Image 1 (cartoon, rainbow, N blue to C red):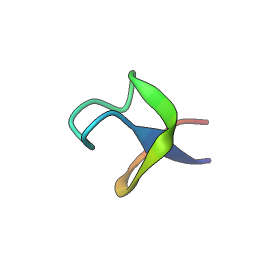
Image 2: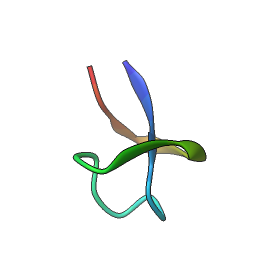
Image 3: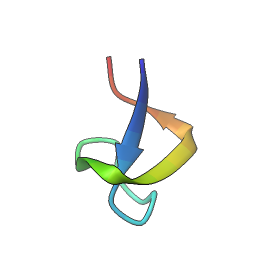
Image 4: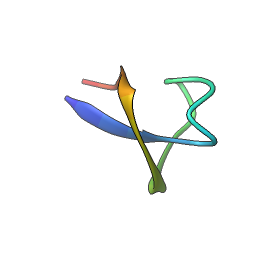
Amino acid sequence: MVCFCLLGVDHQKCLPEVYCGFSKCD
């Protein structure tokens, strides 16, 4: 589902701090 990525660079680095709509994680 929509994830929160670090600086929106890598979807494998999901954090509940920075929102990145172009990346997804589960």
